[in-house]
Image (cartoon, rainbow, N blue to C red):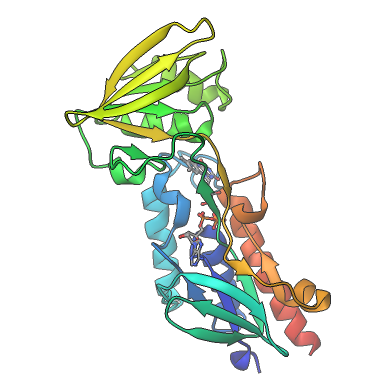
Length: 286
Ligand SMILES: Cc1cc2nc3c(=O)[nH]c(=O)nc-3n(C[C@H](O)[C@H](O)[C@H](O)COP(=O)(O)OP(=O)(O)OC[C@H]3O[C@@H](n4cnc5c(N)ncnc54)[C@H](O)[C@@H]3O)c2cc1C
C-alpha cells in the first residue's frame, strides 16, 4: 500500500534528508528535490557543537558527507531540480519543477532560508552572502559584516587560512558569548564594534570599503572579499492555496523555513522525521 503513496520533499538539507530516510524506513519511497547540493546550509558551518553524538563537535562539511552516506545507505537519490510551484489539484498536489510536473499525495516543504542582502545587494564575485565558496582561499584579507552566530562562525572558519575583520553595529555582538571569546582570542581576527558599512567600491581586484561610526568618523579598509552575514529569511516555492483540510493534512513544513529564531540542525532533523511519521500515520488511518 505504502509503495503507491507519492510524497515529494522539497529541499535536501537536514530536514529534507531526515524526512526522506524516515519515509523510506516506513516503506514509502519519496521524491527528494534539491536545487543545488545535498546538505543545505550546513556547507557553511565551521563546527556544529550541539548535535548529540558528536561531543567534540563536527565540521559542517563532514556532517554533510555523513548525511549523504545515510541517503546512499537507503538508496535515496535526489532529483536535482528546482521546484518552482506547488498547486492543489483535484485530490493530489501538483508540483512544478524546472524540468517536469509531478502529481503527489503529500508534500514536505524543507526549503530552508536565503540570505538577506540589505542595502548592499551586489553582483560582484568579491561580495558573498555565504562562506562556502571562500573555503579554499588562503592569505586573503576578508571582511565580514554582521554580529550574529553565522558571522562569527564564518570568521572562525575563514581565519584558518586568512586574516579576517568582523564589523558589527552594536557594542557587543549578538552571537553566543563562546564564539565571541574565541574570535577575541584569535590573532587572525580583528573585531570592529559600533561600525556601519557605508559604501563599497571595487578597484584593482580589491574591495574598497568605507565604514563609519556613530560620530561619523570614517575608516577605510581594503578587502579581497566581503561576506554579508546580516540575517536570513525563509525561502519558498510559490504555493497556491487550496482547500484548508488538504493543506493541514497533506502539506507539511519542516526545518529552518518555519523556525524563525530557532534555526538549528537537530530541530530541522526532528521536524523532518515528524512530518514523515505524520504521513505514515495518515496512510495507516486510510
Ligand atoms: C555558519 C553557520 C553555522 C551553523 N552552525 C550550526 C550549529 O553549530 N548547530 C546547529 O544545529 N545548526 C547550525 N547552523 C544551522 C543549520 O545549518 C540549519 O539549521 C540547517 O541546515 C537547517 O536545515 P534545513 O533542512 O531546514 O534547511 P537548509 O539547510 O537551508 O536546506 C534547505 C535546502 O533546500 C534547498 N532548496 C531551497 N529551495 C528549493 C527549491 N525551490 N527547490 C529545490 N530545493 C530547494 C536548498 O538548496 C537547500 O539545500 C549553522 C548555520 C550556519 C549558516
